[in-house]
Amino acid sequence: MPIKGKLVDKLLTFSNFKSHILTRLMMDSARPHERPTALDRMLAPLHRWIWSDTDRRVQKLLRFSETETDGGRDILRAAEVTSDPLLRRLYLEHAIDEFRHGVLFRHRAAALLKVASSGSNAGFQGEWLAPGGHGLDDLQVDGESDIDMLAFLHLSEKAAASRFTVYRDVMQHDPPTRAVFEEILRDETFHMNYTLTQLARVEPKQHRRHLWRARLSRLWKTYLRLATGLAGILGSLLLTIQYFVLLPPFAWLAKRAARREPSGWTIVAAGTSQSLDRQY
Ligand SMILES: [Fe+2]
Ligand SMILES: [Fe+2]
Image 1 (cartoon, helix red, strand yellow):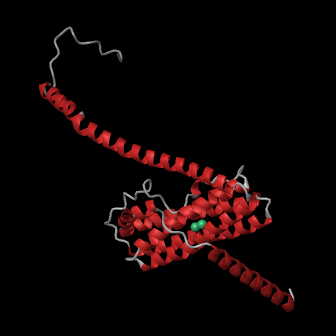
Image 2 (cartoon, helix red, strand yellow; image 1 turned 180 degrees about the vertical axis):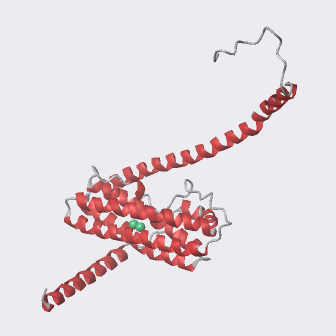
Image 3 (tube, rainbow, N blue to C red; image 1 turned 60 degrees about the vertical axis):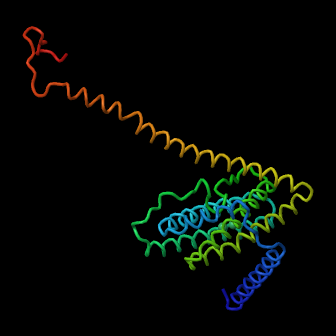
């Protein structure tokens, strides 16, 4: 390609980039940053405890990385299937952001892994009680209309913005991880805002009804997640009680029966022995 052509391409790219940044800034300033929900604020001490352990932090960051990357893949699919050119551009940008978040979380987890001690307990992470940032792992792209997709994305991004605000606030002991959340939070706020703006554009009259429907669906999924977590705890509790209450009498009876058994070889009375020329 001639030098002039290359220069024009670079200038065009720069001009697109500039207009993209301006659009983002305008959209970001259109709505304030999301405040954490009352539930997330209430769970802040639990989040503080979960994130205080380095090994747990590594596990959670790796899981977040997977969720963000999977979410990015689904949004890329949404960009393929939508017939709205503006939504396609926004979805593409959104997908790139989510892939970048995945990389940021993974890099931070790798950096922490180098200094992590192996003695801490990363077992309990309260995932069912306080799940990872996005709800994007529930996203079903094919067969969804643009309206349902935007309503779902808006609520997921809103939830992510709320939780990442709390995570950033409880991460005072780890400034690099806090900086990662701070950076990602800016994108999540943009995602939250553009999805709502676009929903109102695509469905100006009934977008609130669609939001409520998506809210109820999320509520049902939250109930299922809590019920599954609670069922897991109750199951473990009942099995532990059974182990300590029902098993000891059987063990005692087995030991008593074993004590009554004569030890060593036993002489069998003549005539009662079976023939040895067949198997049974
Ligand atoms: Fe994200
Ligand atoms: Fe996002």
